[in-house]
Image 1 (cartoon, rainbow, N blue to C red):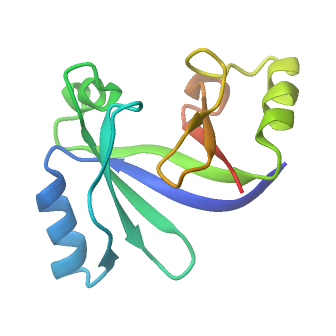
Image 2: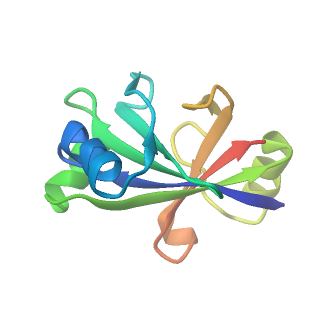
Length: 134
């Protein structure tokens, strides 16, 4: 079912500052900010040889990242994203096993232009899991 780790997402209170830290202090390759209004976030991807780190900043008052940062004002790890071959088949299999898909249960288009969905952290050892069609 799971393929490779696509990225680890870190919620940050200041996207520009976090981007500068990864670029200037850690010497990482960083992309341009990308607003994702459907998800309520602005993201920057840090490109690594074997995966990516996604820096997330709230976009709008109803952003789920704003609520996360209210509880964690310095930021922190928000979710992990794994690739899957057939996201619709995986979603059906997960729902049949009792796993909860967040939102309306349907896929949305993510930052990479591919279908994604999120799984409830209470079903996965306290970790929010994103699945992305590979």
